[in-house]
Length: 453
Image 1 (spheres, one colour):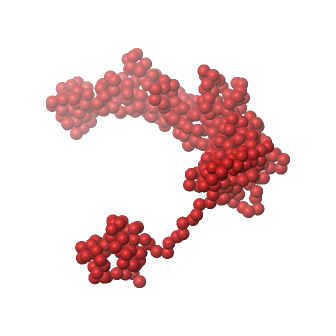
Image 2 (image 1 turned 90 degrees about the vertical axis):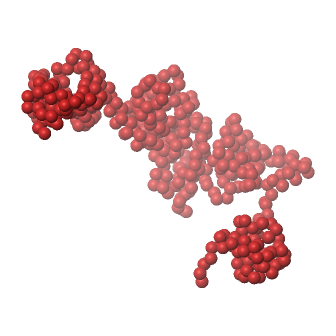
Image 3 (image 1 turned 120 degrees about the horizontal axis):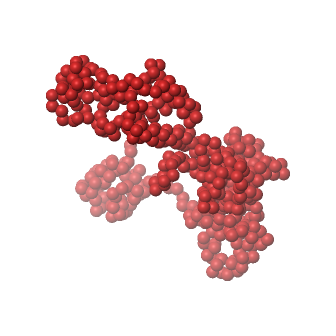
């Protein structure tokens, strides 16, 4: 069927100036021209849907070459109209275009610049809103891919003495109190180094527009990034960071291991006279940093983790996840640390509950027979259960204690022996008849994998 089109008005403002404005907006906002044109297109459709209805079939023409800007409303020509926003009668269609026929489509082309004053205002509002949404999505997509990265910004302002805002260039970052190093002070324009902890496009119950870029200077990940930046051996993978325990502003313990026998991981991180680690310490506000050398031996690992304290002896109870650590009397305070921080961080790093005693405390405890017996019971080496060279019958699922007892009384101690037996042999065992023999063989066939020789 033929299609007909009627243009209500071809008049309009300088369209070339409009397209030049689109180019200016694209450059200013850092968006592509096609993205801005798509926003214009969707904004016009939304505005005209309010005029003609949500179900209306609309098409937007944005042609810079012609130039032309128009909104086309398409309606099917039918005898009986059920949906006015989609359909039109033949008589109405011929008032628009005399050549209209049943089954055809009539298109009404409108100049958006002749929209009503209210309609034009709606278009502008929708356009600006969607441009802002597009800007936010682009910023979100850029920073979302950078989560966990180290970033530099500049202090902007405080909010409620709790939230610090940082200028990141294209966006603002937020540094909540819990992600700040205690007692740090910044003034407008001061450089702020942090990691991007998380990026969210929007937040529930928040009236502020996104994206929300949360930064951190208090996390262990921030310290790790500083080491990767400052220590070449870590950046190159020669020295590996295995874990970090941190009390921001006070002390950090960083667990390292060398992947080369000729490289000392602690020495590589500290440098001659501590020169390598000094820039990291300054960035953290003179926070104490302990470099802990990893060891496969848990007792040695715990001793290293309690640095800078010297350790006399470590007794480990692996089953309970505990260790008794004995230190010289003059190292006890050092081992515990201010407010117990040193021992807490060492326990966190090793994954072991640490009981620290001075040599005097330990000697006093050992002078009591009851205490000595208790300590020896907990921290003495446990006997190792010997490995069996056969599979006990009790490991067969579904085998009752009664049947196991009957088999063992007849001299069959292992699954390996049971496999070799014929049904008739089982039936001859006292207390085992044909039915029980069949059940035993069924359990064996379902539980044991056989290999063909």
